[in-house]
Image 1 (tube, rainbow, N blue to C red):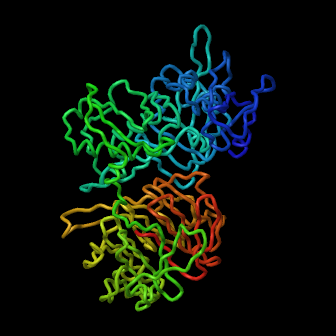
Image 2: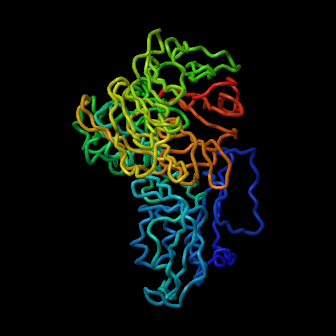
Amino acid sequence: MGADRLRRGRGRAWRLPVVFGCGAVLLAGCASIPNSGDVEPVKASPRGDSQVRVYPVAPAEGADPNEIVDGFLEAMTSDDPDFAVARKYLSKQASQSWQPADRTTVLAAAPDPADPQGPSGPDGPGLTYPLYGEQIAAVDAGHAYQPVAPEPYNGAIHLVQEKVLDTKEWRIDDLPQGLVLGESDFQRNYRAVNKYYFASGQDWLVADPVYIRQRIDPVTRMDPVTQAVKVLLEGPTDWMRPVVDSPFPTGTELKRGTRTLEFDDRNALKVPLNAKVDNVGREQCRKMAAQLLFTLRDLTSTRGEQVELLRQDGSSLCVLSGDQAEEFAADRTSGSSDSPYFIDAKGRLSQLSASSKEPIDPARVPGPFGDGTLPLGQVAVARDEKHAAGVSQDGKSLYAGSIISAGEVGDALVVSEAVKKEDRLSAPSWDGNGDLWIADRDPKHPRLLRLADGADAPRAVTVDGLGDARIEALRVSADGVRVALLLSEDGRTTLQIGRVERRGPATEQTVSVTELKAVAPRMETVTAVSWAGPSRLVVVGKEAGGVQQVSYIQTDGSTSAAGVLPGLNQVTGIAAADDEQQPLVADSDDAGIVRLPTGANWQTMVKEGSSPVYPG
């Protein structure tokens, strides 16, 4: 098999990548376009450059089977309308049954056909070309990205001879459903977008990441803005559906024939909808408009300032501005400070200035957490920045108290009975509801606990699918419907995200974490994690055989080369703010408490300290 996979030098079909180009995309000037020279084969876009366009070539008359297979694989990487050229490589029946939008299989590199098997196959006379590769992800029909630990991909393409006009030509009559792309071609053709829905029973929005086409969608012929609206109206992804709601009436779609939506010179957008919304009330419409504004904010170079929803007859249903939409943000209850906190060398909770250009003396917070009455080992600051929760230096006890006024710390809210410090309490975490979460790592009685309002009696939270793994650390999202967990098992620590499901009235609410999914399956071990926006995590870890690195990972598990951050040695903690513009802060055994401003390298803020955190 290995020889077959390395043998691919027999002349791949030609595709013409075109880079746009003077006036549209300027790299460092504009070179003239050569009008002579040889055409060279291209197997895959080396860096997933979104400005590269691939124009497929139809099969030549009398093309041999190798050329048919190669030409089809190349044509799948294009933006050709309805994949019309790709379909020319298929038999009539296969062209009718092939649904490229059903699924996208993502391989580490372009799929690699081996030598054909034949001259007959299980489906009759013809040739079968095995397809090999290493699968790293898939995108389903709902546009959801699903990473997998790298695993062998085995597909096949079957060819027969079919009459085309007056001659018999080789054509593909059996093939994998959907698209099969190398990672670089996937990144060139697709882009991530967050669509937004309301947390069930709440009035704040939750990000639900999906992938849409970078340019015009070959199947729907919609531009990216219209695609984003369409996928929002289709409803949440399967994983997110149990914990979110959408105020759009069932069956709401764009008005028939809508393929292009554009913001005008005032950054305002009009969205024509079908008759399902004609009788929607004002408050419901405002929520619908907020979903659209949040979904579209990352798709344009300038922030969308206004969305107007239109009834089927073109009349205005409601108008919402970008500022008005902010009342539905999940982090709207956060304090006004943009500065992180940390525990100094004497166990006191202090606050840094992340925006200062020069290191300054940190300010200790008021109250028992800042005056040294109760030396801390781990800490979490509530999102309103009025309270904090701290774990004692021996890891045994959890306390909560004010950080805006003096006072005494009451009795411990949680006490671990574990013998060893490393088996006791994890760092705590606050969610957007004001609830406090913590894990007791006691091998005899491991448990995940939630304290409503940060003060009620701790209640156990069940974690479906946890098995024998132990929760080492956790971070709850600002919206309160997702939790990032570091799970240790068999000497390995992995990153998983669980869905937080709440049942019953607030006073007797039952909370569980369900449907754990791996977010960083390529990483051998993960050391630390923090939320870094509505659908992004910053992760400290390393791949098998690699070195420790700090990188951004989307909550759906997708990554990009741009997500890898400047190197930093011996990182034991990481913190990011809800506001993605704020610098990262990390705890490094080598450098102390450091920050990473935009466009710069890591800078030391304090030489001695630990547990850097932003509110949350």
